[in-house]
Image (cartoon, rainbow over all chains, first blue to last red; front, top):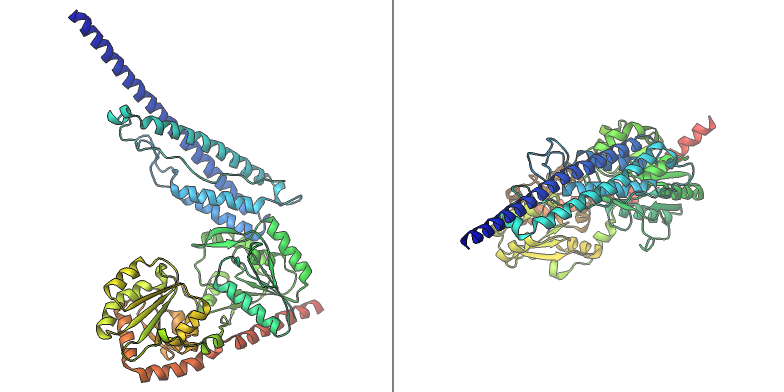
Length: 190
Length: 375
């Protein structure tokens, strides 16, 4: 009788430990995923800003658009370069740009400026330029990369809100990830 | 003359350049010229008849502040249409370095261009990058006007070459003839001081005035300080409760109230700590007959004729401001003398003088182009 009780307790304990470990593992994988989605989004944003700067320098836009675009691109390339990634400090790549709130503002500005500078150009306008196609394509990739990143963040935040995860501190010291909110609508050409 | 004037900033928001442009246009029309003003403005913003609105503008962070600017292909087409329809003899572009309709008009212009530079600014990074590309466009400018020595220095440093200084016109009559408001008129026991400007913009210097307040109250217990201007008033309210009856917060005031205020008070205080290229309010205060106590900024020093038309104090120094105010209140005779010389001195900033100077520039610019064509 007592042996059966001991066995049952052991089974329950093993099950519990397994559950906790599984949860911790899942969380770890999610954190790794966020690191990757953040890096992808960051890369696409930087790429878009670089292409916007290139477009501004072509001299094919009107000078006001060139100037505003150059300023908006420059702000994107220089904002938030020295903060840690939203996950473990150990896993972050040193010197990487990160997805701060400051960056949400400048990247949204760049989206708005790109739309104003490119929409409604008509035939023979700058929309024929290869760099315009590039910057619009990258803009679409930004849209997708941001969605993937925010999905990963939302999943992680949900799990980290669970009582067991909080009680056992399964997330360790990793800071709570944040979704990246910005205006990412690319220009409509044509 | 057929004159086209371009304002880069949207008329949806109030601002010094917008006011200057519409006033200038109205006065030129009053003298019988044909004038059209091109400016960004939403379709539902009420604008004078002579304004052609370019439609949608975008609030953009540019050079450290947010401005509503219009650019892009849709705007460029509207600018082109306006230039075609207007068939101007001279085009007057304000702030041509601001990336908006002005720069686009300059880019498309085929007539002589007069450009006016309003601000004294550091060169933005975007401007540094884009400048070589802009140079051919900027070379289309025939005559350059700066509204102040500070703005002129910016032109010289950033673009090379020079500019003629013609200050912004001031409606001197509006201030000279304003009605006094009994509630704001000072008495020997209860002298009144006025502050004008955004209350939460540090450069406007309300903080400096609040810092000076204890020393002023200690010397002149009956003093009343009238604060007019929009913005956050948390700090001012705290001080107001500590010194009851001293600080009166008027909030935002109309142009008429502003004139009445400057006409009524003993002293106008200008504690700005920087970013001023001209100091139009100082001229308005002088015209209204208020004694002026201002920070020793180079722009203010010039407007106050090196201190002969007003009192200067150390920039950002509350104690220095307090000493200047107390000294001015203690010596009404001197203030009167200064006031008399100030009202004569400020006449050069009146619209009549300014419009005549600007028309001279137009005629020179247009005439010069004719010569080039004839050759």
